[in-house]
Length: 98
View (tube, one colour):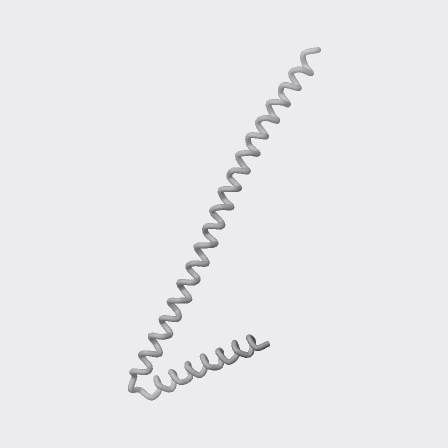
């Protein structure tokens, strides 16, 4: 019976060592996932910037096509688009002046 406390203590030490190893593995996995998450967030931000640039280019192409168009409806649409941009610019200027 004197041996039982020693065996129990040894068993607890082994379990603690095993738990510690699993804990360290989980920490490493967590760090890898955090790094991957950060990379993906940066990638998303870059993609959003690219999308914004492409949308701007598309708007410019549309305006160019409207400007070259002989159709009065297309010219009216171009004028409306330009007026919207002017309103947005004025709004931004007002916010900057605050």
